[in-house]
Image 1: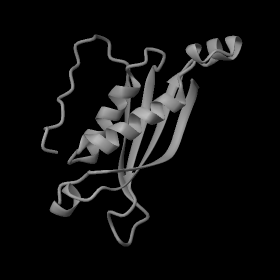
Image 2: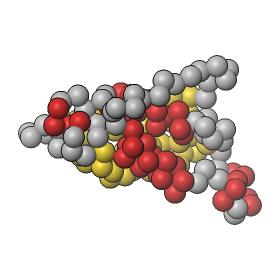
Image 3: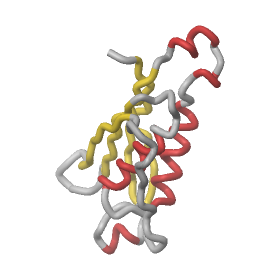
Image 4: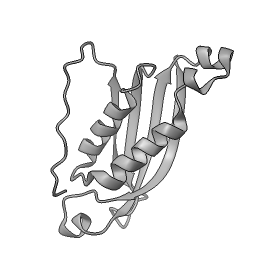
Length: 132
């Protein structure tokens, strides 16, 4: 089993959803990230430069939620995964996004995806529309 760096249940607020009320008022969004990496270089050197910086990862995730204006949770998950994989030390990641207030009778609803480093550098992501 590979080493993993985790950020669990990062609470953010952002515009996320397809319903008119979701397009106006930011709502609670929980993000969890599991990043597969080799922690041995960081453990040996004790230098943050040799580690996946979970604080920087959390900051990037929060920024995407707060400014992305995504309509679908699936799209936000894909963007979060792409951001995690920008660090070449991250071999693969699992991303979960939940909307805790989406259904009155549920603790939350969400999506979980897993992505790996691409074999080539040709994958492109479509930017969210400016009006989101």
